[in-house]
Every structure is written in structure tokens, then in C-alpha cells.
Length: 492
Image (spheres, rainbow, N blue to C red):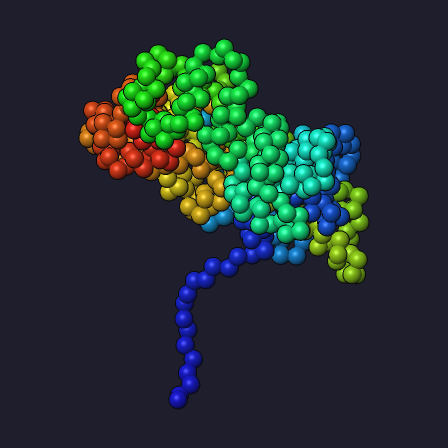
């Protein structure tokens, strides 16, 4: 084989450590970002939390050190703005007549991340503190009863078999097989202990099915409650017909009129089929909004959440120890920490700046939602925002994942504002979110005696120039957990 030399021209994308860090910070949620900042504070001596009482001399010293270090730092990495996917310079000012105002003072100050000075990190331990479980709650009541050790053992076994909704989902015969043969536990003994547990709080706990659970709750009602007898008959004898909403058969079997049946059903609707749902280890998830949207003097303004992360700066005392011509190990370590600190702060600034630009464009596009609600939501995809801010779609995807916007209508993930579109007969487009809102509105306003079928909903939407197939209506209805028409039928 003959060897030869050739010249080949090609392009290759290389991601610098600074760019990798910026991309990683960009996709972090607020909670993860706070942990990342805390780790950076612990590992880099040059970083510190900024306070309000910064002496003017320290600020001037920090500015002078910044200028000197930029001239001699290895690679001059801090001279280059971190750009993701080749977007344009982020320092372009927003025009004064822009439809959405962005408060750039809330992004960052020199070498700092804007937040309330001296703000303490969230107390995560208090958020994740364990609550009392259902089994603990029932065992506490069991220990207050004067039962023998044998009955206590059976009670503990029954309580252990109760699920999170408060229902006993294990057959008593199966529980009998779990006891030691020498105990000689009988079925009637187990039933007697179960009856005792069924009188515990919450009312209805320990029931073997939904019917028994609701009947236990009816026993707590006053004797003279209107419709009480009919409600007991419905739950005890005709639960299947009640589930099928066969009102004609119910009136015939119970020999009652519409008014009496309606009174009994209203009483049943006040009962809770999941009596223990509010007791357990479910932890409340708190959402910290990354962006605030407010209407000020008729204009929608977008601001970053100043409370999302602590405010950082370069430690001037340590930075002053860096010497230009010194190549000792200690001085090189200080120089590396200083350069890493500047990269970290620049990445944080870039993250906030990108987040603000993307949120501003989303608000500009979805002003109809902010003004009128979900029915005014416009179709929006990642490509639309990426084109508007001159970024790549992958960058927009990172920015909008696990980032939340606080609006007058509530807190929403940024991805909530993106939806596909459905064509109209006039050639326009309607957001799928708006269609779901219309379906929800139609089912809420329908006649309970004659609920709208999926075909009828599709026909009504067609009258509004929205071309939606019946299968699409059924899919959107199921996504919103709206039951079909036969299950929405009511007796009024």
C-alpha cells in the first residue's frame, strides 16, 4: 500500500469546560441550582455570599482585580461570553416599545447573582419531615383499647393489611393463614376485632369494599337525616345499579320517586370513599417560581425571582493574594480558583439572562392566556421561541424544563405554554390547550340529565370552526379525567 499525504478541510464542534458548565446549570431546577451553588461555595474559596454592607473600597478593589486578572489569566476565558448553540450577543437591549417589558436589573450585578442579600437557604429538612402514617394512627388507637395480647396481635395484623385509602384489601381467610397454628385463631374472632377497628378514626376505615365503607359512615349520621333509609338500601342492596346510574330500575325496586331518590343520592355524595386519603406519608411538594409575570400600567412585565438563589461575589481578600509573576503552587491554585469562580458566575449570569429572554417571548406570545384564560391559548412549539430568540431548540427545551412562571392565573411550568395546533375550517389554527378548555367548559355547562356525547361535543366545536374528530375529543376528555357521558348522567 502506498503512503501519501493529503489535506482535508472539516468542521468539528468542541465543547469547552465553560460551555459544558453553562449548559448543565441551564437545565437545573431552582432547587438543584441552590444545591449546586452551595457546593460551589464549599469547594471554591474565591466565592462568597454577597451582603448589603459591602464597603466601597472593597468594591473598587474587586473591580481593579477583575481588570488585572482579565489581562493575564490563562486562556483569557473570562473575556469570552458563554454562548449556547451560537446565539447572538445577549447584551442587546430590549426596545422601549417592546410589548413585554423585561427588568434587566433583576438579572445580575457585576460578578453576582441577584437575590435578596443575606437570604438563607431553604430549610429542606422541615419540608421533608415525616408525617404520621395511617398504620401509626390506627395502632395508637388500638393501644388505647383494653384488649388481650391475643386480640392485640389480631388487630395489628388487620391494621397492617389496610391500604392507604383505608380499605382492607386482604381477605380475612388469607389473614387467618398468617397466624401460627398453635394460636388457633377463629374467623369470628378476627371479624370481632375488625368491627372494633371499623369504629376507629377516620370513619369508614377497615371496610372490605366501598359499599361497606360508605355504610359505616352512614351509621354516624343522625337517625332523622332525610333520605337515610333509602341511602342504606342503595348501598347495601343496589350498589351495582347505582354505579350504572340506572335510575329507572332504582326507583322501581325501591318504590321511591325522583325527589326521594335525589335526596338519598345527595347524602351519599357527601360521604368519602377514601376515608384515609388525607392521612399518610405524602409530602407536600413546593414549587419555587423562577419568573414573575405582572401587569403594570397595562403592560405585562417579566422579572426573575430574586429569592431563588443566594447572591454571590468574588472574595476580595483571597483575590488580592493572587500575584502576577508568581508561579508557585499556592499562587497557581489561587489563580485557578479565581478563574473557576469567574466562569461559574458568568454561567449563572448566562442562565438567568437566557431564562429571562425565553420567558419574555413566551409571555409576549401568550398574552391572550394571561388576559382571558386557557381558551385564548395560542399554538406554540419550541421552534417558534428558538427562532424568536435566535437559539437552538435544545436550548429552549433545557430552559423550559422544571422552570416555573408565577402569573396572576397561577404557577405554571414553562412547558405548559407549548401545545400543538388543530386547524379550523377558515384556515386558522387553535391550540390543543384551548380545545381542552372548551371541552371542559361544555361538560361543566351541560344538562346533567342529558350529558353531551363525544360526537355531540365534536359537532359543537365544528360549529365554532374547530375541526376535531370524535376520537380526539375522547382523548382530550380522558386526559382531563372527565368520565364518559353515561357516567356523567345525574338525576336532578
